[in-house]
Length: 152
Image (cartoon, rainbow, N blue to C red; front, side, top):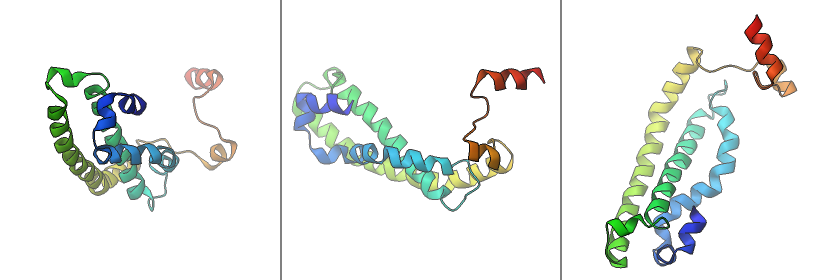
């Protein structure tokens, strides 16, 4: 999607600062995915930071989809007659997008952590036991374990 954006003539003309959050999220995807293991574990020290980073990557990915639909897919032709109109709205919306990133990240940091902790205490997330972690076993990954669980 990002490649299609930069291939499109408007994508090359629009200011780069308007999609910096998307570029940062693209760079952060792998490290944040590795941190995602802390979301459902017992380690609450890293939970807040991990949840905030996951939220940031998610909201930036949402922005990427909107940018992809607007520019490379040509949705701008329904709303704007010229490049000047696209640029004016795109630049204005980019500032709003950064505010949206900050709001989502802050709310997930403040409200998401207590919600995840409460859900964990209620037993809504399966807990891996020590033996499963050491063996790398994930429940219900092969058909034999599904059949055994279903027949008991």
